[in-house]
Image 1 (cartoon, rainbow, N blue to C red):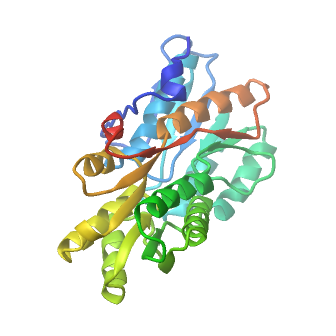
Image 2 (image 1 turned 180 degrees about the horizontal axis):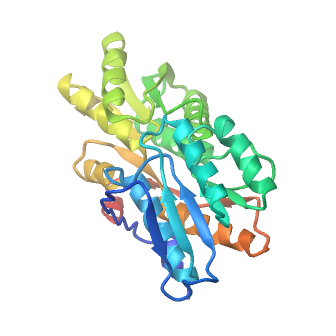
Image 3 (image 1 turned 120 degrees about the vertical axis):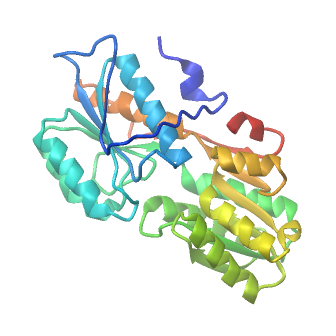
Length: 316
């Protein structure tokens, strides 16, 4: 039976494994063999060293075992290496993969190879980041709503009219666009003065350096929304260095274990949990359904929740 608690909620469980090769083959123990379907999980970055992608991979592996799938996990060496992801997909199509669950590094750049996959009879589902190919199901977070939830937390905890800033992700990705949109609209709607909306490209070091620039020009800053936890943790370091952390609310997005620990420690004020485990699990599950000729919904929301000190321990 499917473990409903794992799919629908409960404590986040992160299973982080160090992978010494770029390809991981994982076969379901019950049905693996000549009749098992092969599903490719294509993520934006390797799970080793990244709690978010490690959680996605963990969900995919559990689904593979549950449903007897031969699972191939591939990722480019960096999220910006779009052509590596395209080449990996092309290679797996040639090898006869039965289905693909993909978090596209750049939806426009990967669209042609995904069209080729579907034209050859290989079904595709998006996870984490939506793409532009028509008729492809998206499995992931409603990022506009999640970012609006973060904005509401800031609105509830910072006086109206305060100077606030937004650290954007990769703005070429729909995930980055939607989190920027949801947070900006939410903060402006409650009367905040948004003094900066700048990309830090999901990166901790860039989050730190961009925040340093923002606080130099805006010494009265009262809040930062970081579009992911990595950037948020970088922002916290910049605020610490400037002796401003006690005066600035920082809200992240992902609720990875490091961010949850930061919330518990009273440094990051809050973060938005998105259930990355569910993305991997449901991605494999639904790619398999399509490979078996079944129908699935156009959009599958994996959920979001506000994480504060009251519930941060559930995500560590």
